[in-house]
Image (cartoon, rainbow, N blue to C red; front, side):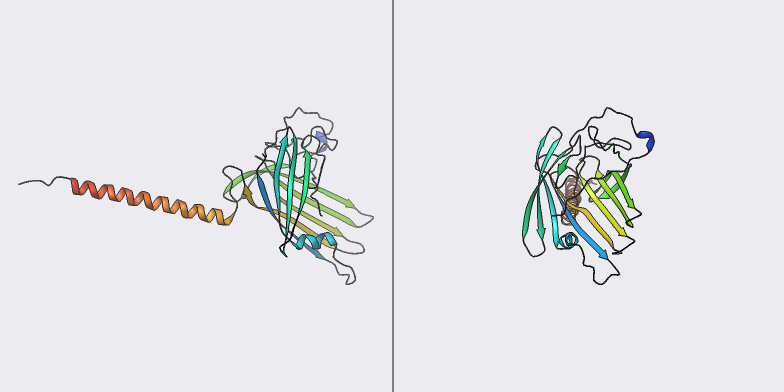
Length: 247
């Protein structure tokens, strides 16, 4: 099964060699769940070259759910059901050490409350940092989001890869990922893979589901109408109860 690989761009050479004391705090808790839609696109002018199997699996996938199983210090484990379009499903399990970045399967969880320039894995060997922090809309509210990016290139092989990842700052969970891979030499292919968060469970004040948002709007409208009716009734009763002036 295709695994998500955590990649971060180093902000600049000025950061290299600087050791910072950072507090790494998990922003996720057991019971939280995050649902992703995934998609891929592949193209090639070579008619005999077949689309890679991992991209076929992506397009055969209906959704992927990441359930937070345990949080032990800075170690997070997950249960990851993959749901397929034929109604079947498979279960994978993931783990990540937020200090080192080491893990397996779904490792795209980082520390909560990181900011621009912060090391992603203070005890890791990669020296990677948050590129920038911006506000993006995911569902019912605007969320501060840590953007990370990496590019890799091999001119000899004619290969270039770009990966953009966006992490919710409060929880450290991946909210969006965009991968683009190009081969400018044989077999001349371009592939794109996208992960996007479409639903959230167990995070206070964060709703993404369109159905849930619609229900919230309807509920708010009902409450507003009820309040208006109650006020009108009170005003009407006061008018009736008001004594009439006598001649």
